[in-house]
Image (tube, rainbow, N blue to C red; front, side, top):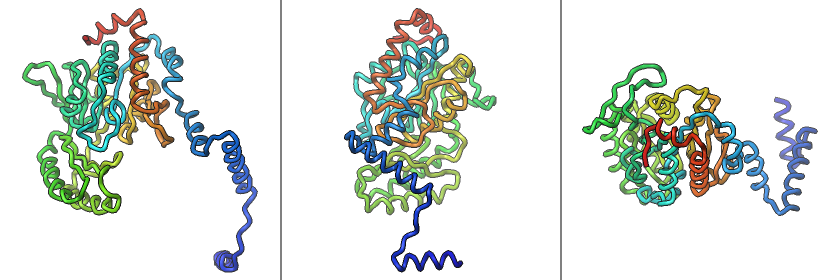
Length: 351
């Protein structure tokens, strides 16, 4: 109590507490960094980014090192869509991937099993990508189209799957029973937010996204209140946040990390000793997949970002253009390998 009163007295009198020796050293070091960066023409922001890059080096700059470690191992490619294969855009319906990116993904999928794991609905992301030789996991992995093999999930339990009319696709939908409620939520959300300028409601089948990139900042709070008022009527669902988007999802233990494990298992690649999963993504939801790869102790989690952020990724790429370059280099590396033809035969992937 006495110390508190003294502190208040010093504050009232305009006195300042002298910094401790530790604080003095921190201030000196901070001043040195700022002074050094100013003299060299580098801003403190650049200094922070350079420091972050030391812990998350460029996957392009580290490519040769990464491929040396991959020699003799099976590589599987997993890709996010928005912000990874396509740029982030104001209108989510216009998040088109370039022809160059599509060609790069097609080329990679010739040599490696390749899957796209997106928060979008599976049908929508497939419509964007337009490739038949990749596997698709929509709704953050709650709607998976996998090859027709014996299905066994990461927990060792058998799950119900179904094939399409052609009998050549296996669909795994762990949140299937929530679809009726999901449609009700979709309808209610559209009615609630229709009057908020710039707000968009997107049906991603097993989750509903409310985009607010075009919403005025002063309307953010109102939009959040409306979304939460709908969510309050559905205790089996929860709210997640992404880049300028709110998402309502079923409260089940399933995310992009589980989808990664499931796909590896159904592809016959669950053995972590000789399998290297490469996962490239830019959003918070991709962190679940990064964690899985970290836990496996084998593989390359790669984050797409142009600024420092907390992440479980080991490597980084600056933007989708660098993702394109990385994928092309990966395809060229495998193509030049003497084992490329045999690997393509093993995975059964075509042109």
